[in-house]
Length: 62
Image: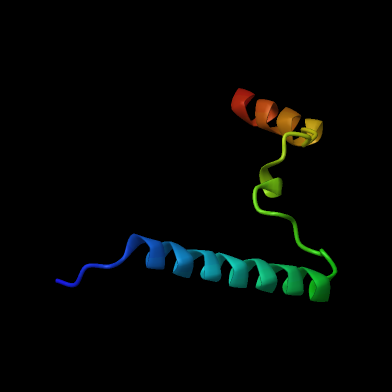
């Protein structure tokens, strides 16, 4: 088993992270920020739909 130098591994990781960051910046510039950031699809500012809620209550009574 070959031993890997932790410093070399860290350097490679930083290079990969930089490449990912550059690609992300490029893709955002091309797409015009049209997609949501990761996690925003579960934001807490969602307004509940009273019509669907009332329909669920109505269905439970039936």
